[in-house]
Length: 359
Image (cartoon, rainbow, N blue to C red; front, side, top):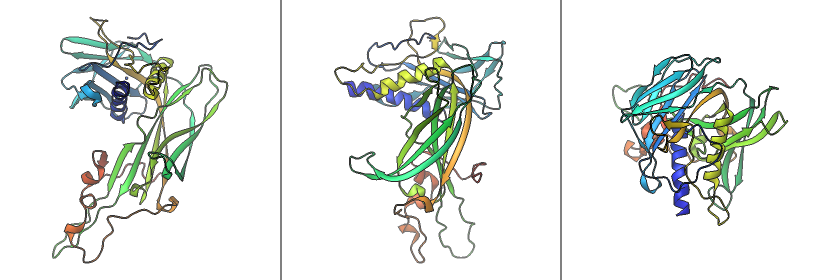
C-alpha cells in the first residue's frame, strides 16, 4: 500500500507540472490524513511575469494512482488586491487560459474558481523581486540511470548566481527539451508536393524531479545543481534545445514544494513519514473543512537556454528515417512520416520556435 500512496502523490504532482508548461493558506506543517481519496479536487495555477499564457488546471483524483481527470465547465478568475477580476478561458480537459495579461510588481494576486455551486479561493501572493543568473552546461556519459548497469545519459546542470537582496530568494526550476525531427520526403511521380515541414517536439525532462533552492538559511550567493537527466537516444540526431525556466517564488510556495518533495521522495521504510496528500493555499470559501489539493503561485520567471547537436554526442545514434533511393514508402516507419507518431503524446509543432536560432 505504501508504494501505491506514493504513486498517487507523484501522479498529482506530474499532472500539475506538465500543465504549467507543464498546487488552506495554513501550510506550516504537513497534514497526514491517510491516502488521497478518489474525486478530491486538484487546482493548480501558475502566474508569472513572462507575458506568455497563464494556465490553471482543475482536475479530480482517480483511483489506483492514475493521473487526475480534467474538470471542464468551471468559472476561473484572477483577482487582484485592487479589486480587478479577470476571467480565464476554458480550453477543454480542465485547462483554463489567460492570454496577454501583464503582471504588476505592485499588486497581489489570488485565484477564484466557481464550480458546482462552490467557490474556491487561494490566499493572495505578490511577485518576488529578484531572480538568479543561470549558467547552464551539459554532459554526455555512461552511468546508471534507469538500469543498474551504465547507459548513455545526458545531464544538464546550472551554476546559478544570486544578487545581494535584503529579502531571501526561493527558487524552483523546470527543465524542458525541444528537439528537431526531420521527416522523410517520399519520392513521387509527376507533380510533387513540397517537402513536409520538420517537427519540433517538446517535453519536460524528469518532471518528477523537484529542483529547489532556499536562500533563507544560507549566506551563499551561488549554487551548483543538476537540473535533469535523460537517456541518450535518436532525439539527439539533430538540434536539441534545453529551456530552463527559473521561477522565483514566495516562501509559502517554497514550503509547499518542499513538502511535496519529501512526500514524493519517501521510500516507505518503517522509520519514514508515510506519504500523504499535501495541502496548499486553496480552500472552499463556504466549507473550510473540504480538503482541496493544489496551489496557486505567483512567480518571477527567467528562461535560459542551451543547445547541443549530433557533433556533441559521443555515442552511436541510430538514424531510422534516412532516405534510401528505391526504398518503398511502406517500409518507412510511421514516425518518419507523421510528427504525431514520433511525438507519442508529447507536445509538437511544425512552426519553428522564435528562439530556435538564438544560440
